[in-house]
Image (tube, rainbow, N blue to C red; front, top):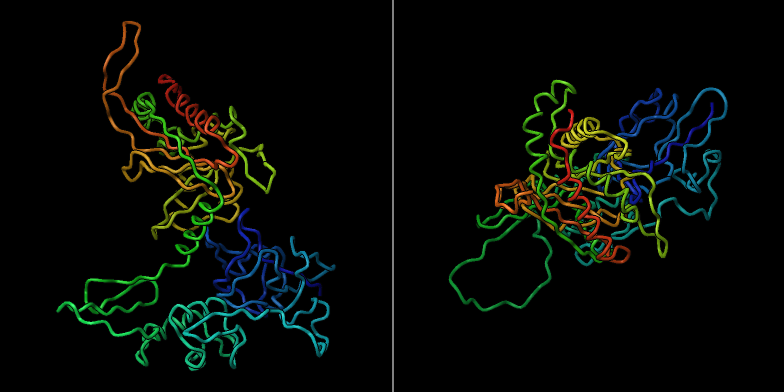
Length: 452
């Protein structure tokens, strides 16, 4: 039997780790090629990892709720036939749970051998909890929850664990927090304050992160879910990394609005797809990127990485209220029908959390449609490591000056704002302003007699 190392896959340019949600296959289970082995999550998407080989799960190296670096070996699969190659991007991480190489895991461990996991710590109520503190190992997620809820090590030791070898899982500690009726949460003691009003302040307790309750009835505390926390971190890092500047232009999209109204039934009949405004916007952005290729880049230290492929991400809302950015690869090679098909498919699967890992990575520029919420403009935050993002506002009827061969006229037109945020470290006002102006020019120049 040959051994195959399954590693944590790379999920995107800025992703350095992922959290194991659930092992679909257990040790000893048979797997076929493309069978789902494990479900994982990043700040962008929850995903399934398929098996690249057929064989038997020999060893699972990480528990659910543990966070693992990209490229780290997470499982060993026994395969039949010739010696199998290691899964890509294993690097120097070919180690098993006790720190040995796969071929050495049956040998006696060396007396001074270091464990695979370095003890991490969390400060909880004045007590430092290490990953291996007490009689059990505590995952980073469990320790973080203990820290948030001010659960001491002694209290943590008393929580019944339903995981492997009695390990406390996320569900165990959240259930404990929700039903916690013992000693009150430890809080720093502060001097008593004199009562200055007869109005009593409500007491508030937090629950498991998805719902909250307040004793007084006028305050509710709801913990962020995992994806919202990661999105928050991503946004903060973007603002800390890139000095943002935003330029605005107003665009007359009357020709596009009228063409779409006149042809949407015919478009559906011919292509089997609804035609929204997003494909028109993406088409114009792709054309403008060809005119200003330096907007299609990222920064690596003092180096500028200019991307040759035009891969446009589009912000899409999920059913849980969070946002995700699926990517339309090589958007400049797609016609309007091809863009409509991609936009509809990706948006639909984004809502249902069914996107694949490669469909949310590789983006070189991002478009977000704030007009969906009725907003006329916005100041979008750059999706790192890109250097620019454009927001399309709501389309509204407005009186506008129209130039004709007989002179200027006031007419009712369909107008919208474009907002272009860019990284001022590498994109100056000329480039950022010229780019968004060019996008507007392509939208205004749309041919009203264009064939469907």
